[in-house]
Length: 251
Length: 206
Image (cartoon, rainbow over all chains, first blue to last red; front, side, top):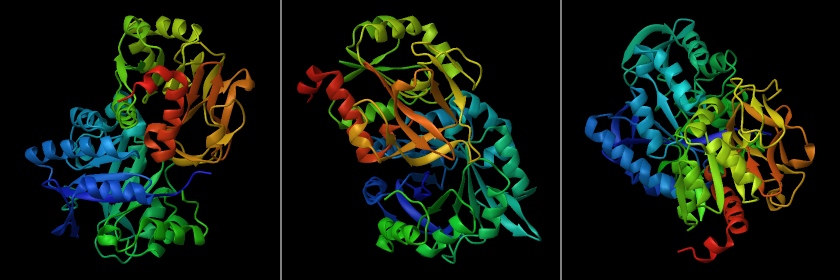
């Protein structure tokens, strides 16, 4: 039986792991390679590196970091943040990443998703969807959640699947950084509308939040950052709570 | 010497990193000539079968791999590298190498596709996968092999439907999952292939 995945996210800036509350107020969290090794050894199912600066200089630093991590960590790696073109995707894959996460560029150029899927396979194309609640639905945001697009996020998710996305990474900009739990309604609204795997993100503060996003949010994977940083919760402890609640996890 | 067959779509890096970590010596293989120089071959595959086949043909590797497998030298196909062993793929109607009889079909399941994540393998035949019965490996795919000869099925996995997750036929091995991305057990599985395939290389490993 396919296990639900627990995915630590490493927000990277200037070669270090940072974490922002509502995408701001960065706090230095530690060396990415050391953290990646520790997470893999502790049972992380995958790792996501998010380049939250996405500057030209930062990109070279990030790719070098991915190269170093890929030589020592043998679980799937995803790189996101500032992935704007097929060349960017090729660069992160060549550095040793297994998947690239596209967000803002997919809005500016939706065909990038289908070109990337044809060139590299859908399995490496993750489309990141940042959304905030608006009325009865959720609105797609871009540029690190700063810019509302007026596009319905659920409809956008369906379109990204049609264009060849292999997975969707959903982030609730309302829940992100609050540690008050995932946006279960948003996650479920998307997960029930698409046939590709959905990774929920934003708001995890304790193991029960992951239980809820799998059981009530219908997520296939849960991404979390600060819950794992500074040993707040171990991955093993989170997986133990998931297993106790009846969620299939890899132990 | 183990050769890593490059079909241009990437993913050499992951397997190369894993072999380096295992201190197994290897060299990249781009064409039929280079394939003749290796004693065992690994074909790491991601992406679509059709694109991979086109790239193999360009280097004469389609005939090269047929001769290689016929010669009894050990071959390990990973993901698309497994699928290419068969006659054709329903993914894009692409012809495969046709080294083994059977087809590549979409997983007949009501569950989500692509099948992405860690799933367990159940050992059902052959010797190689035996020690890994019940272990979890990382998968990312929508298509699976359907061998005509069920005797070569080495392992099966359940994703709303049971599918073939590994095959073994003489010196030909294939896994639908990614051992290079499956943590310590994945590395051990790769090491087991390398030991069996190329004991000389292993003995002289750094």
